Length: 367
Image 1 (cartoon, rainbow, N blue to C red):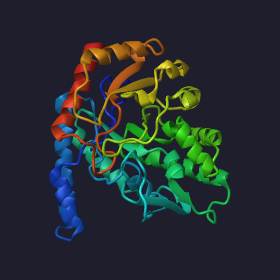
Image 2: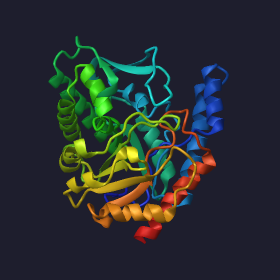
Image 3: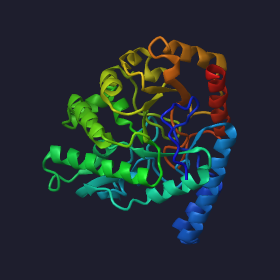
Image 4: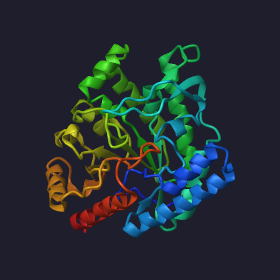
């Protein structure tokens, strides 16, 4: 099992999710229709995860993931496994630009906790397959339960109690993953990008929510959750503006939250979406005032298969060094390739070429 101390930055990294192989999609369809057993589906998942892990190794990536191949969603599958949380079909999906997701939603129906979560076993399988590489695992940030979930006010009439229980549940989760051998855990969080969008902030206000208050509560909850973690547990965060079938939700640079997240959030690295003008410029990185914080620049898009010009990417990395030293920077795609099981609009071959592109450019810059 991989228990390497990986506080150092991996110059070429990736967000985690991968396109679902056609064989796996077919197996999941057969399972849903009752044509194969759960055991048969799990076997196919295991074989496909083993295959994509070996592919990541062959490309030169040091940290490998299971591609989230067992999941339908990047967030709901994990959140539904928390004590006190239930999933349901809401009748309407999450609205992206020109597309809507399936109508899955979550609600808090009881006191929050973290007990025998099925994804602990999912991680153990990744660790077994990782060999000499680092087994990286991705879960949604605690902020996402509040941001996307419906909270029963009969269970949590007091917001402070809710956020305190949420932090405690995640603290238990971090310990459980650590005890299972995890040394590299990534928290995925779209709420910070939405809090940078004037359009999204107006929508929050229309729901009676105060964006500035959310920034402070999410920051406080996250820091409580990661406090006193083991020294050799690397915690990173991925922030993006939505990723479904190559579409997006929000626009806006990081400036509205930069001082808070870069200066006050106690994690080891940020994966930042920077593949389009919607993410703004690098100026918010001036708020990075820690020499132990890594900024992973998501300059390679996962939304289409065209390869970026290597020289242009190198120029953008050099531009970022105006604000953050080169030794604190790394490179990755701006998001995963399949935040949901439907996946983005590119082929598996194009996906691997994108990751190879990241590795080659990183080797040119940092070797």
